Image 1 (spheres, one colour):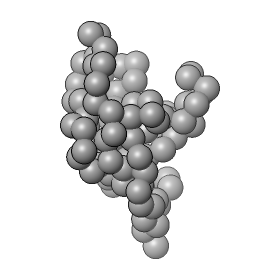
Image 2 (image 1 turned 180 degrees about the vertical axis):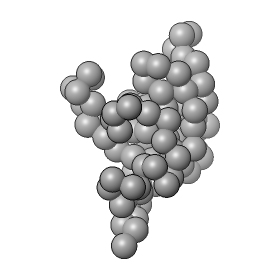
Image 3 (image 1 turned 60 degrees about the vertical axis):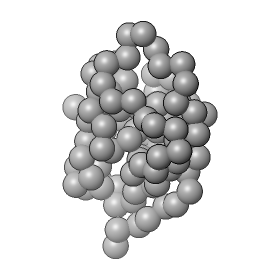
Length: 90
């Protein structure tokens, strides 16, 4: 499975790129009716990956602790999150 869209845990997410971002959810409104899986809580801090999406043509925020179904798995639009930290795992 592509690393662009997948339910990855921390170990799998950092295996090919040793960086983790942390982001606050700033907008948890308007959950789509067809969304299946975890949904962020506004104000909560999450470990994430910011990944360019070929399908959407923009960067998506993948929450590493979430599980979700296809086609977006654990990916959310960047307008829903504010990245506050970047940690390189050297």
